[in-house]
Amino acid sequence: MVAAARERFPGISFQEFIQAPNLALADESVDATFLFSVLTCVPSDYGQRSIIQEISRVLRRGGLLYISDLWLQSDLRNVERYERGQAKYGMYGVFDLPEGVTVRHHDRRWIETLTSKYELLALDEIEVQTMNGNLARGFQWFGRKERAATAG
Image: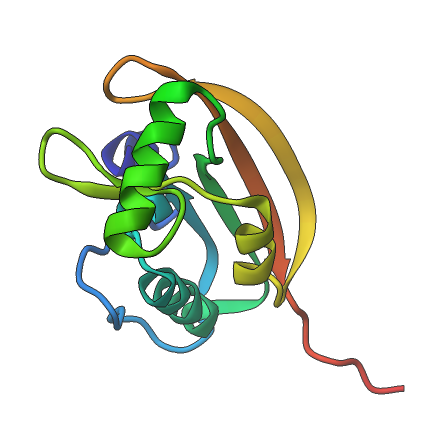
């Protein structure tokens, strides 16, 4: 996606960061950040908070944060996975995939908590197809980092 964005918009700098927890960027040096199914791949509250804290550090005041991810699902297959995961990990929504990866689907209240320092601009409910071909309820959350207080 980064390569496609660079080709389509050559005047904008797009960067991809895999190393965590600290991005090699200056404080408040980024205009926007995009998390496409990133939180699903980080099952712990601590890990997700660390991601948002680091984004908040590098994102300029008034900068934009976009999150596209998955809600908790209500179908029997997922409910059973969540219950097994809760017994194993102590958290509902965390579960193991057959491929040996632990993932997480999200409760609305957790996303509200995680993004509480941002101004919510839009929250859209979407239906997506997972990497295993299943349909799932997802969301697109779009917010703005708080601006500096104005004098006056």
